[in-house]
Length: 316
Ligand code: AKB
Image 1 (tube, rainbow, N blue to C red):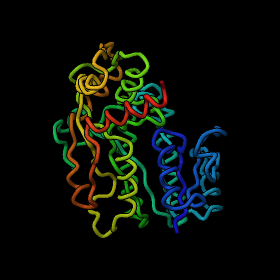
Image 2 (tube, rainbow, N blue to C red):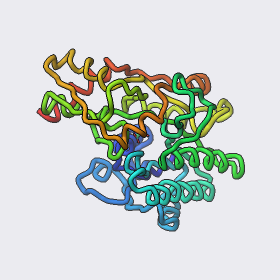
Image 3 (cartoon, rainbow, N blue to C red):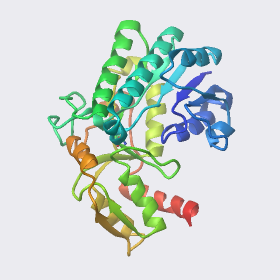
C-alpha cells in the first residue's frame, strides 16, 4: 500500500486530489499538507494533515520520513499572475519548494509528481496544436519556473533514478475550490457569476483561446499517470494534456443554453492578457494518449452542464 504526501493540499487541485486519493488508497495513506491549517477544511477533517512550509527542507523531510512516505505529489506553488506580480517570491517558493521535495523523494526512494503548465510555453512556441517537444522560451516568471521544473525533474530521474512524472496542465475548472492568481481563473469565475448575478466581466479579451480541462479529468490524469507502467513512458516531465481550447465568448454561449439572459462584457487586465497571449491556443496531447492512455471525459458542453448544476446547489 502506498503512503502519499500531498503538498499544497488546500489549493485548487490538492483539495480534490486528497479526497479522491483517500477513497482509492485509504484515508490513513494520504497525508495532506499545507502552509496553513483551516480546521474546517475537508482535507484536515478527513485524515492525516501536516502544516508544512515547503521552502523549509528539514520540516518537509522530517514529515515525509515520519509518515514513511513512498509517493510525493508536490502541488505547493504560486500561479502565473501572482508570480508575475511577485517574481522573487515565485522563484523562491516554486523552485525552492520543488528542489526540496525532489531531494526528499531521492532520499526516501519515493515516486514523485509535480504539475507543469501550458505556461511552460512562450510566444515563439507554435500556437496551434503545440507539440509535446517544441520551443519553450516563456516570458513569465511562472513559465521560467515551469520549464526549469520540468528540466529539474528530468534531471532527478536521469541522474538519481527518481521516478518523476508530470503533466502540463491547462486551465483547470472546478466547482469545489476556486483557483487563485492564475491567468485562466476567468473560466472558473464566469460560472460562479453566471449563477450569482447572471452576468460576468471577463478580464481576458474576446477571442483569446487557451486550453482548459475539468477537474475530474485532471485528477484522473494524475492518478493514471502515476499508476502507468514506467517502461512505457518515453516522456516524463511533462506530458501535454487538454480537453478543450476555448475563448470567453464560447463559454458564455454554452452558459446561455441554460441561462438565456446571461450577459458577458469585457474589462481586459493588460497583465493577464499579455500572459494569455504568450501561451498556446491549443496543445497536442498525443504523447499522453499513446504512452499511458490519457483521455478526457468532459468537453465544454458536458462540463458546463455539471458546473452550473453543482454551483446552483451550492450558491442558490
Ligand atoms: C494559471 O493560469 O496560472 C494556471 C495554469 C494554466 O498554469 N491555471
